[in-house]
Length: 313
Ligand code: ATP
Ligand code: MG
Image: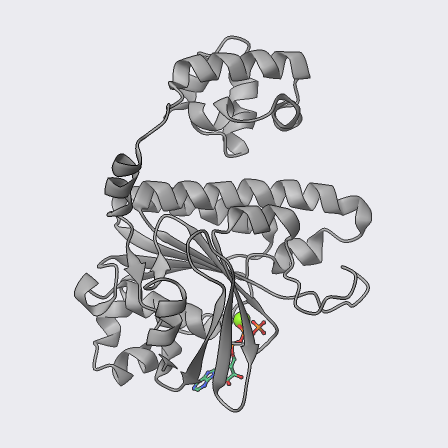
């Protein structure tokens, strides 16, 4: 939808429209479902005015009604399942990483988050019958950990042509959280031209964590992260893409009351990620994945390996 459409709402001038667009409110529906308080913050307008804009957006957006279970079941048929590389891991997730949702992998250093990222970037380019999504893939790399050489290694171990796969992987290196958010916007643009079926953000939280320090910054950090996540969700919707984000666990014991398995990102990420998977190291190259939160799968664990060939059984 265009800026034009938002500008047509009563009470929205060009400046307000621009602020809304910049904050990720790029269509009427996004505005229609927002609360007046948040919208007034975002657009720097009064809450009453924000309420009126939301009402107008509701009218204009044709807020959907209810759908039958059968209709929803039909829509679920479009959900793709991306192979992780290990069958037990796929089973844990109900067949693989789902498109249309955000899946979060969190765990300490060396638990395999970045290795999984490399593996699924390769897999996403594969045809559906091979557990792929038959498309292209994208990664927003915030820690400078993406290695094309690793992609080649994983591809070669599977008798695939590394060049062909590397051509389908788009890498954006994010230097700070602001840049990271801009790259998500670029991703939306590129997604219009190319069938990008997987978007990885590795790591989702590291820049946010480094930049928003102290209690006073927490609210702002969460609000910004929320915007970012909603942009990612929009990407998932538009491209029927899988969104995979990685996240560290809190290392500072008194920062979040000392639970060593607690992911960073707080409630916002907890509510937005549909699947949350906790990774931990086991003996040697073994890793254990634990499904913490899923709408339709029981909690459980799977063992997999991180090898030269990538993620294996
Ligand atoms: P961080 O929080 O630091 O980003 P991470 O969870 O992303 O950690 P990974 O980088 O995915 O961790 O995992 C690193 C581990 O993967 C290494 O300790 C090593 O065991 C394994 N690994 C990395 N590259 C290879 C390779 N080419 N062959 C075999 N194992 C590898
Ligand atoms: Mg990593």
